[in-house]
Amino acid sequence: MKKQILICFSLLISWQISAQQDVMLSQYMFNGLFLNPAYSGTHPFAEASILYRDQWTGLDGAPTTQSFAIDGPLANELMGLGMTVVNDQIGDTRQTEVYANWSYHLFLDADGKTRLSFGIKAGFADYSSKLSETKVFDEADPVFSQNISEFVPKFGAGIYVYHKKWYAGLSVPTIYAADKNVRFNIVNDERYFRPHSYFTAGYVFDLNPDLKLKPSVLFKYLTDAPFQADINCNLLIKNTFWIGASYRTGDAVVGIFEYNINPQFRFGYSYDFTTSELNDYNNGSHEIMLSYKFGKDPIKTKTPRYF
Image (tube, rainbow, N blue to C red):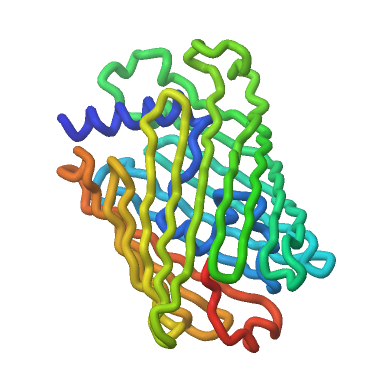
């Protein structure tokens, strides 16, 4: 019974604020496009990645996420173009988002090693909930007598400064959501739109020719919600294996592994160990990722992609 109550509560919360929620991923530090549109085109090659996340395994109705991202440079690396597609399902509620990302890059030094990128994203989110299939205590409740579907255009932006060995970015993935049911000018209204804000930063330290250390952070801010931080540390061994860990405040400890199969393919896996009260009701979260670099340039690259 307690397990069923937790599921019902989670579904209720996820639907009430679905238009404000961004999908959570553990391997975002290897592809920042999901957090910041200014990340698009920040490498001299195009790359595509797919990712699957199975969250809180063993818990009925727990979230599952599938995502696809592709981006690359344009106009001699002065601009970038990308696309992200995310499908997220929690119980009987589904959220599908499709975005186009565009960025413009400025050179901050003479040799072009330090750059500043401005990015925007535009797209839509499609929310649906099969309430008629939801198991409820009162089957006569009219709230669950029909399904819900809503199409919401969205717009976001971000900035990103980067170098071969470090980066920092600030983004608001959803600045505006054109939802007719959400008001934007009544601060205390329960349906007032509250965008997420993200700050990311990371650096790569050369320990020796075969070892590199990459600490990074992600700070998440949402009005009237607890501040959350991801603290990450990854070790690159012989330019082939990434092994690391993350701590997500109030939520989970994450183990991360990534393998550079060859200069064009990489594979990643992460496991989240839940540290919240949900730990008693699930077996953790699994996430797998596969990416591919296009063209011949990646084959000539002497060092792997750090960010």
